[in-house]
Structures are given as C-alpha cells and as structure tokens.
Amino acid sequence: MKVAVFMTLLLLNTGINSWHVVIYAFEGTDVRGFVSLAARIQEIVGLPVVLGERKLHVPARAFDFHRKQYRAEVIAQELVRVKKSHQLVLGIANVDMYVEDLNFVFGLALPSAGVAVVATPRLYPEFYGASSDQALFEERLLKECVHELGHLLGLSHCPDVKCVMHFSNSLKDTDVKTPFFCKSCREKLKSLRIF
Ligand SMILES: [Zn+2]
Ligand SMILES: [Zn+2]
Image (cartoon, rainbow, N blue to C red; front, side, top):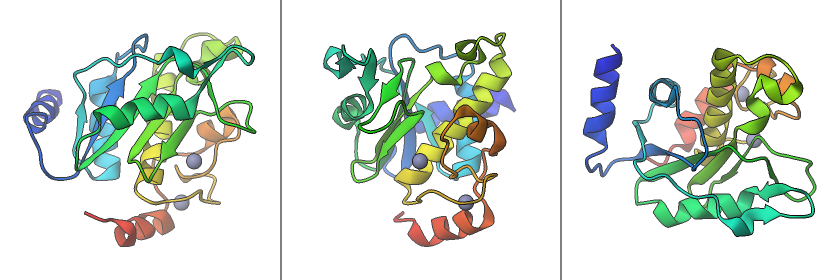
C-alpha cells in the first residue's frame, strides 16, 4: 500500500497538466511522515498531492524583530515564485507566524494566488510543556494542511466544530475538529471547484 502511494507520487511528479497540490517543506522543517501526510491529504481533498523536491528558505525579511515572529504573508509570497500552472501550493515551515491583528496563526491561505502556508511550532505538544508525541503532531499538521487547502478551493470558515474548516482560535479547536470536511462543506466544494 505504502509503495503504491509512493509510486503514484513519483509518477505524478514528472510533469502534470491537471490540477494538483504540491507540498514544499521550508528549511528547518522535520519532514518525517510527509509521504503519508501527502497520501492522506490526497484522500481527503480528492486531488493528486506531490512533494516538492526543492527545499525553500524562509526569507529573512519575513522576520519581525519586535514580535520575534515571522510574517505569514511574506512566507506565502515565496511560494508564489515556485508555483506553476494547475498547482495549489502548500508550504510547511517550522517558524512561528502571525498576521496583523492576531497573536499568531497556524496557517494562512492566499486563495487568489493559489498558495498557503502552515506553521508547525505550535502544533508540537512540547511547545506547551507536554511530552513529545509524533502521532499527535502529524494529526494536527494534517488538519491544518487540509484547512488551508479548503480555503484555496474556495471554502470559508465553518460553524461545525468537528469540520476541518472550523476556525482554530487555539490548539484545543484543532484537537476537537477532525481532518474531514462536513457534509455542507463537501457539498460547497463540489459546486466551487474550478477544475
Ligand atoms: Zn481558516
Ligand atoms: Zn464544514
């Protein structure tokens, strides 16, 4: 099963002209589990998912010296530079990100550009003083990735706390929601799809 998934990923990476998702890891991001992450996203979102071969750098200009955090928009813009046609690009970076008026963000999507970023530091149990748990981390990462891709596909936030499109104000919200779209979001997705 695992081999089959990996083969699919490899085959798809050799030049595709239909819509697909490319995941890029920024330098300093632990990519363990990314093959299964890609496979699970593919299953949930229903689009082919490939892992980008290039390691991207978080631009120094994204760092805010006052807040000691990174501007999510600036990091997302880096993805615009590598994005090709028929791609939705998702970047994963192990730096704490924020946007104006929020203390931090787990991720940011720029739907008009077709790119999104997910920040991993606050998804680790260690960040909150708990002991390390790779499986829990990977589950949280999956939810945040599917959430941002949902935005790229045209979905907005959903009131259903179990739906992956529910807004995560804190990690508790992320832990309560599932990695799946609720029935209503699934129906909206069908009508919103441009491909
Ligand atoms: Zn959101
Ligand atoms: Zn929903």
